[in-house]
Image (tube, rainbow, N blue to C red; front, side, top):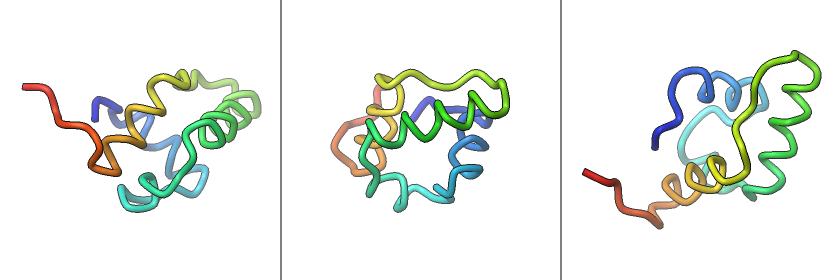
Length: 66
């Protein structure tokens, strides 16, 4: 949900290869892991609010906007 290829690549890099795995994640812990990757690679990382949206969408808890 609005993540784009850059963020998808970051998720894959930290071991979140698919939507089902994303839906099982704790958003705060996931954001922390992404931040650690960003610190290590000097890449921009998504904000916690964005990560929460992705996790909720992966769980099917939100409806996509049209």
